[in-house]
View 1 (tube, rainbow, N blue to C red):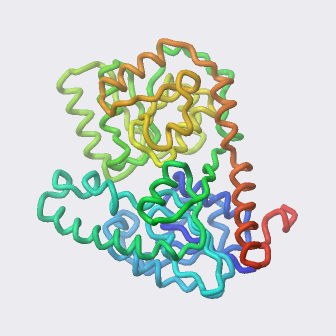
View 2 (cartoon, helix red, strand yellow):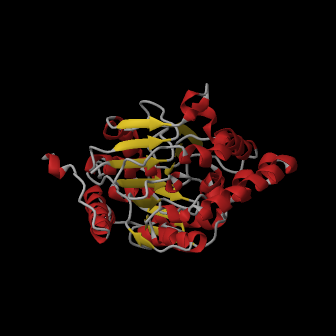
Length: 390
């Protein structure tokens, strides 16, 4: 059986790439199709596959400016020739779910989310405050067209698998399709507590690990930590970094608090793990479709303060592994941060909850869905890593 994996783009190891990594390990004979591949930006299990890219790959400076090519993505994803593959597995948060499989192929989409900027978060990405009125008006026309294309091509996947019940609801609302829920993988073997960490909570910091993009609401985390008087470390990079640094600097100049905000950029997994272990609290201020970071933090035994919407309500147990905040307001988050720091949380209890979301569980559940879907169509089973004796 010939298998194609389709992924939007490969520019770093974020949540979607960690999903893809497990699929690459489970289906090592697969070929990978992606709009753009920044070599060396993803893990070895992904890099070792045969990787096919789109015309974007040949454009100079595309690594920094690929998001500006968004209107071209539908055409580019449709140009991939997948007719020779029996099984297509797409991992999609943008256009991968609309790849055109062969007429006899089975296409299973692991949907990270229907594309946010084309549906319900246009203003956060392309609103007048970000682009100005003329440019925003043009982007609204383009994104309306993108949303119609996204909905029109929703039936190209034979089956949808969602990362959370929250995303399953979005798939139902925007695509009129039902989805099975399989929570994404968390590397709970790698992310674990360090018994040597014994710093008092009062000497620690709040931590955010995130792409620096609008819907993550990192401005809210900055303001909340300033109100709480707690230093904040931010790991990650993205197009909003300059604006967020300015926001943090404006708060300092206004002398709202002595609390520092430190932008650390992208770090190694080992460095991020070390930061998790020593954090007093890990903050998730935005509405996430699932949210790997809260579970990585919990695997390290650290409590989480998260917005009580989206995937966080499926991954954070209030008063046991952290706190959920009902209002996306700095004062509400500041109060929750203070409460977490002032009360004891049991690291072993927090970690036991996170272990339920491990990588082996994800791989097993996805293999079972692939087998079940293929059997229902009378197709042969694929060769997995186990078949290779790995």
